Picture 1: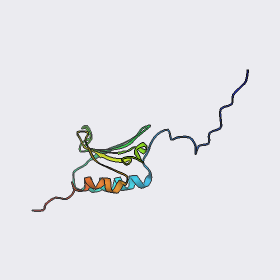
Picture 2 (picture 1 turned 90 degrees about the vertical axis):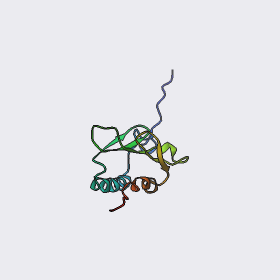
Picture 3 (picture 1 turned 120 degrees about the vertical axis):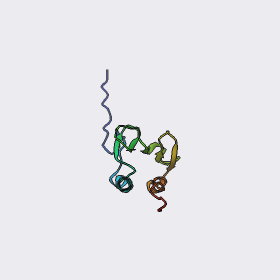
Picture 4 (picture 1 turned 120 degrees about the horizontal axis):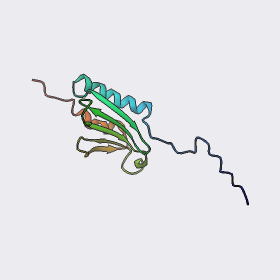
Length: 115
């Protein structure tokens, strides 16, 4: 009978238990969120950090379904890009590797004709 000791795993080798937005990513997201709130389009947001995805949900009213979801999926980093903007019906509006370029799809909503 032999006793097997599990290998020592350092914190750097351990896979993350949940995906979260980094401070620089949140800065970019919150800057567009602030502009949309000032324009009167958005009113509330929610952040979910799950095992495979981090989601920033934007609401017009708190009790409704999200208008948009900004998702970060690190597993898609080498394929389609880990950032995505998803519309209210679940359709992917834009996906890519660069968060700023992915969020440009939301900035078009800010541009309106002035009478």
